[in-house]
Length: 434
Image 1 (cartoon, rainbow, N blue to C red):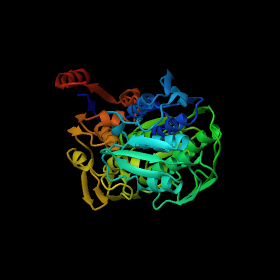
Image 2 (cartoon, rainbow, N blue to C red):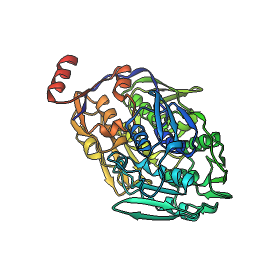
Image 3 (cartoon, one colour):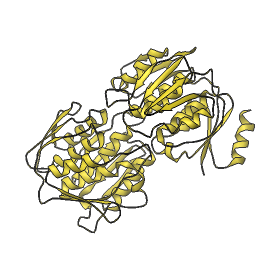
Image 4 (cartoon, rainbow, N blue to C red):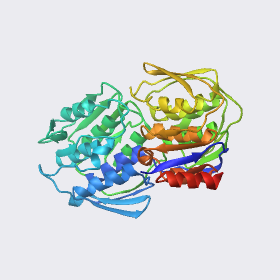
């Protein structure tokens, strides 16, 4: 089984280019099936989650073609419909975003059958708000046959929908279903993340009528049909943030290109606050750091607050600070599973309820680690790069779900990291790098 082997202690320097936003891509790829015409989507991240979703889209009859690694053509005109067609295979249950096909297919055909989603085990992520939205539009929703969601309607009719909690997935799913519903739909308490704006912009480029994306009230006027389009996905806010914290934790100097600095403000603010230096350009940020960091407090919140997907990476950085920091996790209740792994490297972190109390240490030492989920896995890579000595990280399949050419980009900055299959390869790496 593949793993990373890393020799830490190198200062990371240079330039890195950020891929398209995974979370935006998953919504956009699903939405592309809502027209019978061809959609060409650029800046698609070449990661396991997007490849898995595209395989699922193919299984129901859509035509999918990679024009190159980052450009995909999708034509939904050949999709098979009917009660015997279910988005369900060995892959689709592995990713959370499979549920976006519910909204897309329900909107287009008034019928959808999709396997219950999987993804990282970072806590309960119920789909009750998705169901509430679909039912408000006139659909009947059932969970049948050991975990398949079936949604069907005679006709979808626009409605006023108030989400009980701010949820990205439900906001996108309801938005997709509503664009082909009759009349007006209003989604209140909508999520405001950049990828919601990107999905809305993509749908509008197909002929939808969506206003207010990026605010907490989204207004949709249903249209008769959608058309083909060409569209380029926004840069990945979380990949950018991961490299920002990596630069800081390794006391580096890294120019992170192909970003939207506005999307990174919560991360930039905290890095500046603890003593790193972040310089913003039009489409890039530079992160520099030296010396010990100052402690701070962080609470994860929906956008524009500090993103939960950056919490583990920031914890790794704060564990190298001077003093005591506190991170409060308000989104997912199971997001501190990396703490036990980080403690093996010398970190001093105590989890109390939904908060982690972090007492700074002078440095990390290498260890054999296991990635518990996608973002925690990336955080352990950062810790290993900042540590003295060698580390290995198992279960990198989680990391590959969301980061494109992660090890290659790190090597481009001077980091010593390699993907290996077994202990013999680990020993070869150690002999080679000394």
